[in-house]
Amino acid sequence: MTQTGVFKFIIIDDDNINNFLVKSILKKLSSNSEVESFTDPEVALEHLLSLETDDFNDLVIFLDLNMPVLNGWDVLDKLTTRFGGKLPDNAVLYIVSSSDIQEDISRSKSYEIVTGYLTDRKS
Image (cartoon, rainbow, N blue to C red; front, side, top):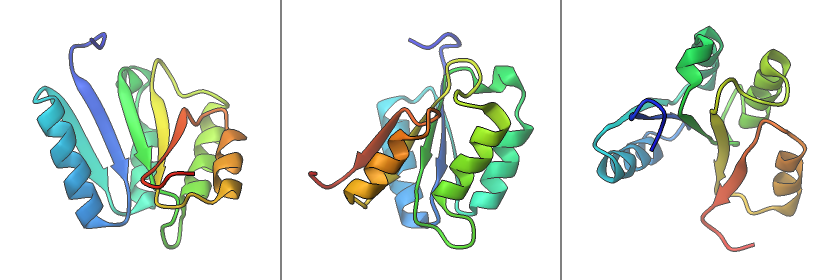
């Protein structure tokens, strides 16, 4: 159980269908969850940078890598610049990508801020 009793998720993916599906699954897994989704990574980044430290409590962020204009790597760089190697409180960030390219997986491990790399493909 989370400290607050509420599961909080942020999905950052430029694909509306993916956002809808993930949001639906998360809501079914926990009706007590709060799910925000962003198709524009710049807006998502602004939102994350505006949060107070307590807002990160029990927060799970799912980040897509391949997005136009500002991609997932850019978001990671900006979050790392702001927060260093770790998000505030017990927040976690997972990369969710269709890419099973080993270079992407290895690169994600160079970011301390990344908790894990999730893909729908076997690598």
